[in-house]
Amino acid sequence: MSLAAILVSIISLILGALLALLMIPVLVWLERRGAGLVQDRLGPNRTNVFGFRFGGVVQSFADVVKLVLKEEYYPSHITKCRWLLMLAPIITFSAALLAFMVIPFADNIVINGESLRIQPLPVDYGVLWFMAIGAIGVIGIFLGGWLSHNKYSLLGSSRAGSMMISYELPLGLSIVAFVLTYNTIDFNAMVQWQSGTVLGFLPAWGILVQPLGAMILIVAMFAETNRAPFSVSEGESEIVAGYMTEYTAMKFAMYFMGEYVAMNTASAVIITMVFGGYQLPWVTTANLLENFSYFAWAIMIIMPIVVYFVINWMQKNNAVRPTVISDGSREFEAKVLTFVLIGMTLLIELIMIYLATSSDAVLGTAIAVTLLQIVIFVVKLMLFNLFFILVRWTLPRFRYDQVQNLGWYYLLPLSLLNLFITAIVVVGVN
Image 1 (cartoon, rainbow, N blue to C red):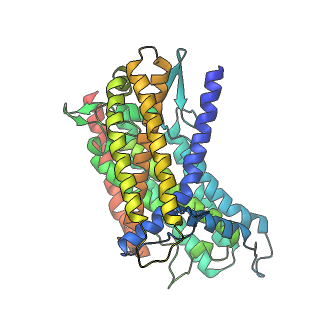
Image 2: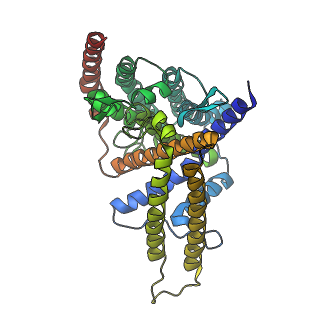
């Protein structure tokens, strides 16, 4: 293995860990601010470090510190298998984290004639890995409910586990339909397939090629992540916190973080299989490499405009009303962040000018294309995570019987029908 391959593998692994773990406080912040938006209130935005609030993100880190410092408490009626009780949330969290590691963040980068994957675990059987590892998470839920020796916990884990197992059938069948369509089990190859067009002018994204399969996949992913409206494992008036009732401190935090990592993983899989992954519509990686100078000029024009609106919005929202007594920390934060944004914009502008005007920057262009695709992937990831959050705060929670009826009586027959039609079309086309 060459030095370049080792460096790319290490960078991809670090990037995967950052996108999975650092996304947790961001998603918690987005959840709270999204709830505030839906409920016509602000949400948390007061916790700060040296006057820096970052729109309320600091509150998420404060909650992490609170959970870390809480006492590790075991109820007196739990006397056996305490190590399994501690292992249960680790299983759920680890399964969601490992499933995320096979998602490609950008197309392969070619360095010295060697094609290298921008993927934390560079495997070409990502679909099988996701299905196998993702299914392990339900074991942690069952263990947590059973070992708690609590009727609420047992009922919650039974509900969640049975629902997840039920929805794995339509989920698996919808994924098989996508595998037949793309003729691969490699996530990166799926994204490359979607860089083409259908009917000559539409992007060949999964949502257009497999609309029914995409719908089934998205609904099943909502159920697999145990998020509202499928959050049958908990209910304040029924079973309290479900399988997490007897958990405290970091054991509870592992379950809590596992839910957000699972949501992030589900969003990543959906955009990879359905919404073109790291690709822009109608633009392939080859197009980006051959015509990057045009994209560089476009970035140089668009980025200052976007930064201007961000700074204007930030200055407006950090302005202190005359009736409010302030020490000026909010204005100071806005000034510092404005300075940082302007500096970053100027640096990126200089890099884009060099790449757009230089004919020798082959490696630099390849790296810039990779970074652009990573940014595209992250933007799509954030948008779909926001969709998850808005659905939670918009739709009411379904009853348990409604959830099971939807899975067995509607999604399963539809997924079988979709698979049957897909097989006929694929055989006919081939």
